[in-house]
Length: 261
Image 1 (cartoon, one colour):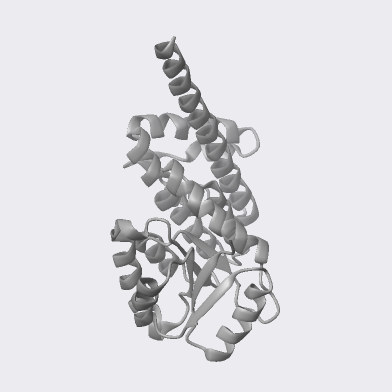
Image 2 (cartoon, rainbow, N blue to C red):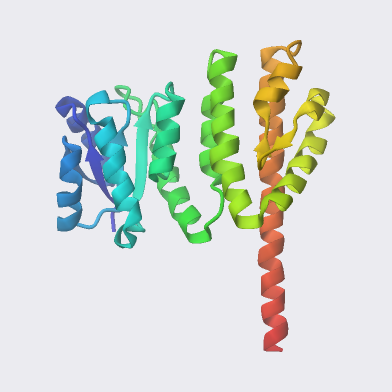
């Protein structure tokens, strides 16, 4: 059965264009222009995802409130919320994460340029994260790639802080506790220091790495080096989490087998 997508697009011409493009990929697309029509649409038909533009000022605030309400209701647990954005406004992306958005499509609405595989992956990773109740590596790597394209250090650091605070350590502290998070933090730093010694100045405070303090202590480090070092650190941390998660699953499975025997 084809995936059913509710597309919220205030610009009629864009809605027609996007519907044509995504329909060609096998999705069943329903287009609405007003966010207030989201709930009535959901009451009439079951959708796999809602795709919406968070860069439209006139509808942005309303979208967030509606999505918060949708995420609070268990009835809509299987519904993926995907935002399209140019990625320039990190505050909007952070607010969207807090509102319960599952994933992002960056530069999605450019004429003739629709990353269809990225859209497909967004749907899949949202489902996996909900089932496993763990961090979403796909979403983190997507934001990390977007951060890499920021032209200034200030914009890059906003993205890195967002990734580290909202998508990694907030979740890890909740799932594993702050002490475990701190151990993983130290190990990821150690793994990254061979290539980027300046990461030794990265400290752990209030349940998360203090990236802003690192920057203040490494003023002599060029932006490109800082960027590569922080990306290396995030990737090493993700590898550690993946190994730890696998060990936990294997351990639980072993205990279950032992009890059965």
